[in-house]
Length: 365
Image 1: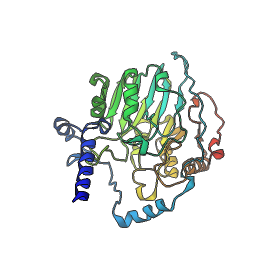
Image 2: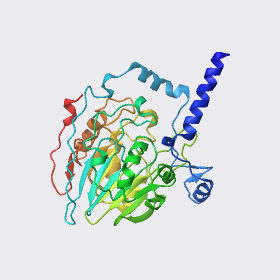
Image 3: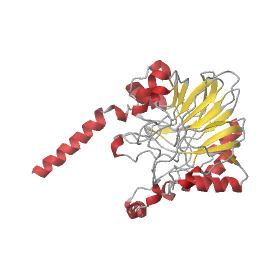
Image 4: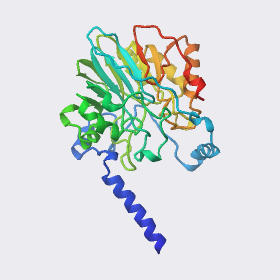
């Protein structure tokens, strides 16, 4: 009897935690869902991908993955914190060349047309609703503190997963950001966390908007969404086209490989720079996360000139060794004679300069 009472208490506590803790965000309202029905990629109350995208989760399919996990791999994360470069913030000016700074995983800052843009700013210690239980950041620290950041003109979000949208980060950042542009439904999370509704603009796939003087296009990705057990695919996921007078940039967000890349390239390419995910993959979920060789194919499809691989170098979210993504994507890029940039976390890249590629990760295995 006591055991049953304890189990019931745990279940009720878990339910209440998920239902009321703000970290889980807020689901779309009835009016929101009614509005989404006009979208061709919304069916039966959830968003769907352009092409069939399934992840086998039955025991027979996942047993090899579980076995691989239990066997362990000491190289899934670095043996010591990886190096970072302190963030060098300079005053913006209208004649400044476009600069990009990578903060690990998919978090970046773009300085374009006298504006500062943050992409998927996840500055927490772990991508989890309970950060002290999550896989900790490889670099231990970031090359800056949020308090040190200047005013941010624009934040772009690709979807609502914890490694891209972090409750603690948004709470610290919200007073510094002029505008958030996000895919459908994600704005509800931000509103629950205290972001002023007037600062939030939601977009559907292929929707073109102007924000902070930049031309943006919310483009498709092949992925999924959700922050709790009951709201899978209730919000949209996307990639972004970012165009100013100084450069045109493509940000992939999270995505499996698919025909959308070629479609985006035909409509909006070529791009001066692509920021393409290359890590946290596995054969069992290749439909939602590209293999590194597919990252190179996607870069070619969208007609990119330079590539910075992202979605690696910060957290362990898959079973491969932590350096496997960058090693494989560099090898595939070299085989295709591509211009690939591999900056350290915090290192600023100027698009009008030639950069010598470093293999900084090789000493941190």
